[in-house]
Length: 143
Image (cartoon, rainbow, N blue to C red; front, side):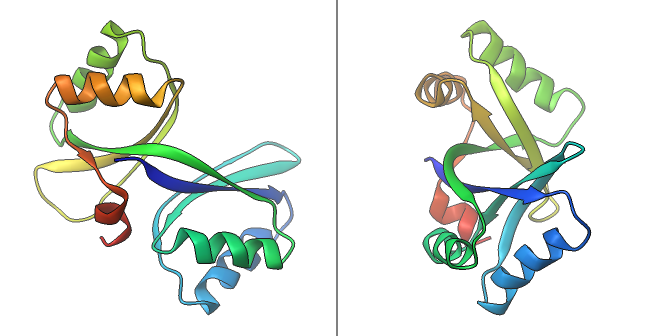
């Protein structure tokens, strides 16, 4: 149920993000989800791709620093309060969210959010007991 995500460290220079994404594109690697956070000097690109091993090896080969991190991809009711309900469930179990980002795979009644927790196993247990569906890596990579 864990999803493998790459965190890529980027110098905050014009064109650097495009260079990294072109490396992946030229190898036929498809992006499934993406988030970018930056400071004045550097950025962290968090990306889920359809072939993590190939992407990680290619980035390393091109001198790009990338780390692999496990995250959870969760279906969130696409309605007012849907995310708030899930965060309340996690808060009752003292699970902290380190970061999260969302993406839309297709229109419907559920959105998909990617979460990094301070304790992934505790979060997964709390979500499952609360009836929240957690996507597998295989499901997410093949969207």
